Length: 327
Ligand SMILES: [Zn+2]
Image (cartoon, rainbow, N blue to C red; front, side, top):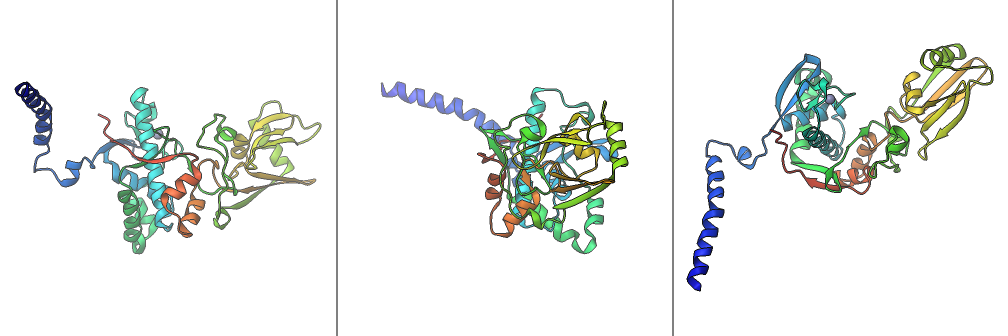
């Protein structure tokens, strides 16, 4: 009986041991420590500005996204939160395109550098120009640290990478995803955001003469009629953003209204006089998910990246992603 057990144990060890030995022989001494750990991985990026696809080191790509998306002057914990959000977006896209077609605009790459399509990205030459020679190394060091120190961390909900959307500045409350884009997302719900009023982009206003206002509406909205009023009923979200607004008898989505009149957010107050319409806004961006200036405020009062991400993404976890490898 003992003999049989020994034989079984030997068989189990040998069969389980073989793949282990094969794998470890591939991780040869020629590779660096990072390569052996599998931390160096590449991702295909479509660089829209230069109309070419480049296989980039994942961390290099993420650093260049953080450099483009958040002011480098921000506190380290805010930059870390931003790095994790950018990594989460990347993993979310890789997962999505594994199961469906890569969008045509990407020319076969998993991600692109078009801010309005994927995430903004900035080349070394451009960021050096933006930061100036005296600050470039310091800022790049801060951003590199934010990406490297957060390793493989991503934000998950039900064990899936979230759609880690963010915006510059909130109105004081973030918006529900459903009030801005229509679809309900459990972790993208309105929360109080502190410190946004310290953002240089917190308040703005645009003034239009009544004639200018009408002309823009007539160009963009079919069937407007000014017989009774210019602006009618306004439907607002709990956070104060305009969900829909009646312009000359036609209901217009708040997001469409924002872009028609070149406004910074949908959190709009409207004052109409005999000749003029004043549109005042609070916040900058769509208002959903993480507020970057809010994140920086939280970092300034000693909160860490986890506190920041969990403030803006409701009910999420911070998890390690397994791999970026897609091929
Ligand atoms: Zn894209």
